[in-house]
Image 1 (tube, rainbow, N blue to C red):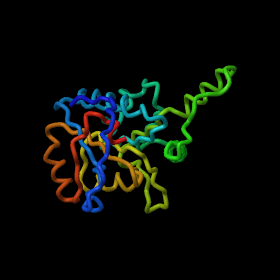
Image 2 (image 1 turned 30 degrees about the vertical axis):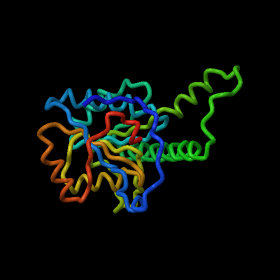
Image 3 (image 1 turned 90 degrees about the vertical axis):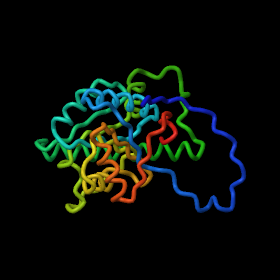
Length: 230
């Protein structure tokens, strides 16, 4: 599946029909299929991120089931200049883990501020005086970077211990977990208006259908124009 960021002019909306009030909400769960080879998964993830982070300051969580998967993902995305990356793994010091989670929560606050400003028509505005120095430019660049955590399941927030969820706008399942883990990832990582993207190879299609049917979720194929869901 090819992922693009083209944005088509939306069609004019006709007057809503009387039944439109009862229409189904748009799907929040998506999948993208890849060939059954590990490097194709990482390539698809990188391509996905390149397009998704055209939205500035987008908060993203990528969940992995193993340390090997986490290492592969972190290696693939570590040099992307538009992402501020942090990795959570089981032998990370607790103090470092807490700092990473708290920084991500701050990133979600910045994201919400940007969204609210856009909705109110305030915009970000690029103007300003021409004499801005490089430090100011670097600071602004850092603020618009997407903040991404790559984590194994053992390091997700623990509500039972009083830890708050991180409320990412985008949750990416690098592989499909069990239904219980899928729902736990949602509960601890996803904002109320967030979306889930599942990177699925051929061997995981049956697992995808089982999760969909047993959880009463609708998991749709991801649109070619990813901007439609972001």
